[in-house]
Image (cartoon, rainbow, N blue to C red; front, side, top):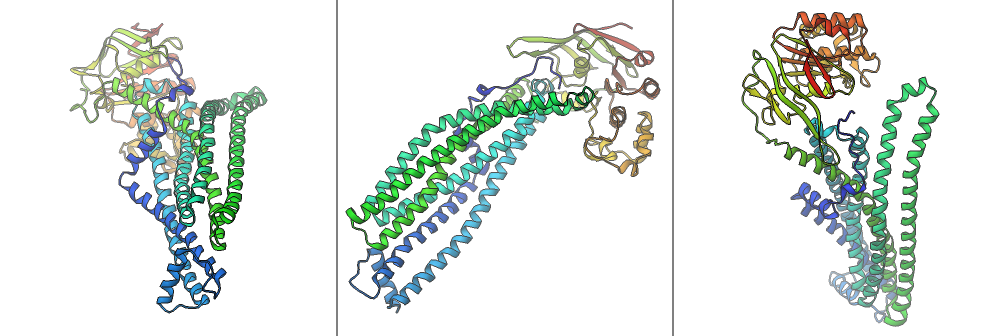
Length: 598
């Protein structure tokens, strides 16, 4: 991707504006009324889990007590025993059977609730990720072309793929963290039901683990930012590798490309290993704390508090359930902190795109009535195209004093590479807006508000042909052209592409896979030229759209364009003499200054 103002490569500090609170607010805005239902089902699942654990107390105490009425029983067990005796369950076996039925019912209900919880969480988390991806794609798609050109292709790809993927991990960590956290609270509440003293002891040990997690989360976040930068570099080297494959094969430089790619992934691998090492240390610390907690439960519960056998069994079960939950929760905090920079990076670029849109004076929903008159000349008076550099300075890319193109004119735009030819025709296409001066057709001037109507009558064929995975027909009619077969074949013949499509097995309905990889560069250019001719436009712009064609073919195509020009204005950027020979006017662009030379 070319950039007149130099590439913009967001670094780790570009994301300082986003925070965990911003992520929660974004989730809340997406989920809206669904949050209450989601939290309710998570809480219900935790309550059922806790109830199942607490139910183990009367089960264990009933077994230990046997038929002896004087055996130690807690108040909960005595109450449940009284209820069962009231319905005629008097023996130990009958009471165990009754408790078993209740326990099985709880397990069945819990299974139904857990399934619903998992489905709801997946729908919410995946839906949120899709919303973020779509919002970013929409912002980028509607951004002004000069804004898009500030970014490297690798950076945008990294944001839409790697960073969105890491954000998905963050949402999964957050979802599982909420689930496990609520379960942990339920387990802790169960511990307080058995023994307040032991519940307080467990709460203190959990607080110690939380301190460890809080301290290490800062480092996890720092490693996440470093991984952001490393992933950008990996994506840059990946796109370089793919774009340079043919040149590398021709120069036998495959090893050099491989070496560069290996170097780019080494840093990302090192950061990932550092994070996993930190995760392992935190996990080991929490497991050590859990072991201490289990020992304290046995010693304090039996020797100090005087819990009976059933209560000790339940407390041990609570600790065994709580320990892995605590590990999952606190390591999840680290994973969330590690993935947060991906969200920050997405928000940083979105913020830049929104600010650029606001500063461009675009008014959503405001479109002018009508379109530029086709019978009026295309005119540019004292215009210039400017962009802001990374240093905040205005840079003039191209300027023109007075250009006038009558309807039915083929204009050749020439000049050395990098002089501003493409920027000039991009201005006439509405991809740029004039920083100074005016571009108009009659009384219809190009500005932010009139641009949609202006571009509705412009057809643009760039040097890099765009073919997507669809049929020939779908590619020719992209994005919204309605044309019958006769019109399609007429455009193909004018573009010199009729023979290309005619020899395809399915003709117009032949699939174009992998960007039309089976076709040569010149053949793809001809298909894209045919697409441009099908668009109902009064201004046709060819930005080196015939550069991959041989001279004879190019000459015949330009001749047919000139013959069938009608009332259109055709602006043709080319280094070829064929365009010069057929041109009615010639524009020379040198040093960023466009002027009429013939």
